[in-house]
Image (cartoon, rainbow, N blue to C red):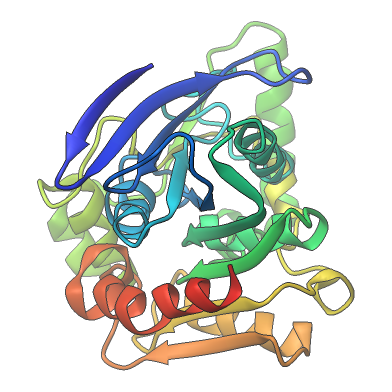
Length: 318
């Protein structure tokens, strides 16, 4: 474990392995100013977007701010991604992503300074969809926040149109997996355009701003590559982040989206979540003149979401 100080909070870089795991999870724990290891603190787990890592928006924006508000916040890398273990690399498997949330909570409850009855969860983009899905069956989470949350199963099926539809893509994945079983090299797919010019030609706000976020000094990180292992991509096509939300989502839940709609579909997924949950304690907030990536790190997006909605929400529900 190592520690660094950022403004008035402390960030501890840790790895841990639970009894059911064959690899380590890497995480950053953000501790509030004046932290007292003998004290008792509410905690929030923060989950990174698809193709991202703990150092980006989940950590440097949301976990940082929550620690400044007095929470213990833990941003973690998904298994097979970032600094966490697991091979092959760059796997995006919804079942594993959701199980990682349980593993993080398993670790949190062993920390004497964490109040196990006051643990919340927050996820960004695909991490927001995973956050909701984890909360369906992980009741140690007492409050749930999805920030520009994307149902990655729905997005995967939509994107499959470029490959001839979901069934055609599943056939391609099956062929690649068989080839790799016989010794072929792994195939990696990239979800970002190769240049800003190509992004502009595509013309979609989410695509343009995705390139700006991941591929420029604004936020680029070696582990935030938005690339994926092809042979292990089948599970996403049969997954639905909000399945049984009407039956199992009983925690107070806040979904925040911007009104600038793009190809990734967070706006419609936010409305879909609230409609499917059908509960008064599952609430949607739509921020005006805000895009998907404004909610990653921009004052009018992430800043406003935190100031006006997320901080008050956790204060009330944790």
